Length: 471
Image (cartoon, rainbow, N blue to C red; front, side, top):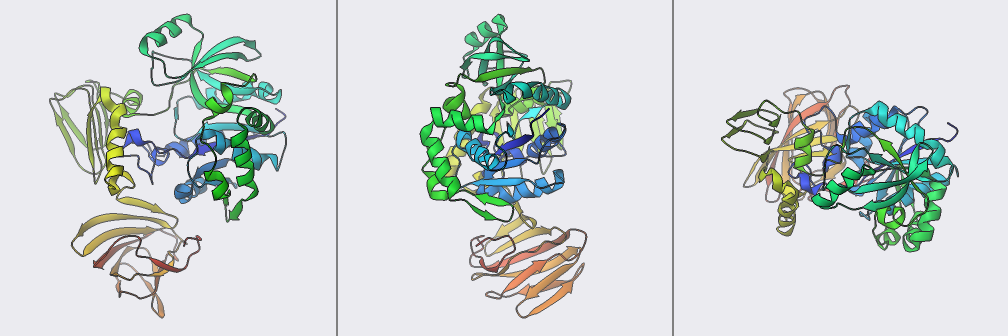
């Protein structure tokens, strides 16, 4: 292998069809779905197995930047670049920004473009397929990876292979989510693959083809890139120029138009995890064909996806349902209608319900907080601060706070005084008092925060200093 491969991981999806586990501020790429790590973390581990792989370049939403950085710190030893989209514009503009970043460093870089929220079963086979595709990409092909189908799936796009081309084939055509009869006909022909949405190509080739086939996107991305700003590990393209870019996918903007498309087969277990039915199909089943996660009791229940996150879930006498329990929401839907969950999300958005945006457990750059209880003029939270991390120096106009240390050591600034607090010690912070919380220790700091006041919203924060650059 002569060319360096840089993973370009697209981390901007919202995963609305997997509500209530996936939400706007905590989308499905950061959800574990009963595993020990998130889909994003598993993607990082997968590409890390490719020999001599370069540090990754992540393209994500501004709102998810700290979740991305925290997971990178856990999963990747070296440095990674993070490009922040001001707003989603689909995959073509996202990859265009990554290509511009790589072209500044190395004209011959190969980009391995892949989603952050897919499940792929055989890492060794994936790595082998990527390495087999390198000669094609080095010679100027835009290589996409086709998954060998194991059944008639109508929720995926398909690739029809053409003539043999080294380790792969030319692409004859793309077919977007055909109906069942069409899928069955295609599978009988034996020359179709599922479209994985994974690509290997030179950054220069991507930019040439984008300029040729989608000049408005190319011009807008170039303008946004020229107006970029850097903040710590983050690169922010110019917001005004980026927001003016028409959104489009790589498939529509380039792949369906280019003469340089090639497909390399991958025979692996794969899913885009686009719905609860996908999670059901991926999950291990009991003797009654139920896929179960969490504390679940199922009696006379068959063919169900049952996921309990916070309490006991009991099911009796039901068939072919999806039941998902979280601390603040419960979803019940027939499996055959699992794709329609986005209708629920759309209604929550119209009604401006917080349940569509975030969980009761909220990630922050310094750690996390979880809402435990709330009522008229009070709210209780559990706060966890990572070792060495600190909250901003801040104050509140409408609420007072009482902090009780559960475990670890807290360095608390309360007005003009800064002192250490340990387990079972507490302090009271009046309304309008500047304060800061820091963990100077080597273990996570856990404390209980009791808020009281006329207004308890998260926007009642005035920041005076913040190591994370937040306003």
